[in-house]
Length: 192
Image (cartoon, rainbow, N blue to C red; front, top):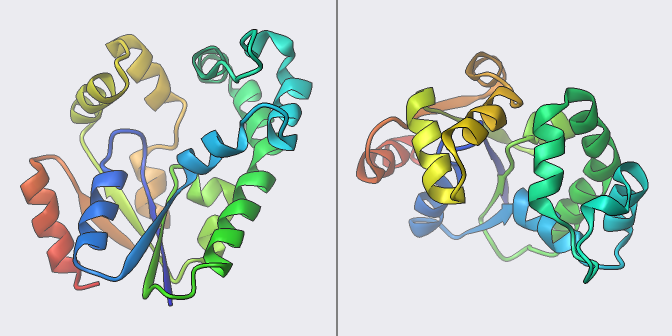
């Protein structure tokens, strides 16, 4: 079994790249964002650690996490983002490792994680694919995907690692500035 990390900043095309690899391989995708959403259900230790750090104000009356409010906090304040990461990375990384350990029937495991390097997940990967896109393209994609303003998309990107960081740390670089068909063709060139 090969473990491949897929990372890059928001709107770079990580999810689409993973789908293209999965389409032509016996692969399973582990999406770190989906893991975090699952772990943040009411009553979990993960959610309780977030409440301990950020207070009850980030919880809806029904006990669910107010993701938008939390996002606004962490994208405005670097120290708050680091605080969130320090209280959640352990839970997310452990859950991803558990998923990998229980998936022994696939040839490839793809870890789709924007914070792959920051969380240390790169250390369990055979190699890491980094997606790089032009900022304007990323902003358009984020606005369309998440239904947020251009200003909020820019805040999100400003809070993330730069393309230079990803270029320095990735094993394989894929540029994604055109169409999905172009991205699919780039994936085919990887011969995974």
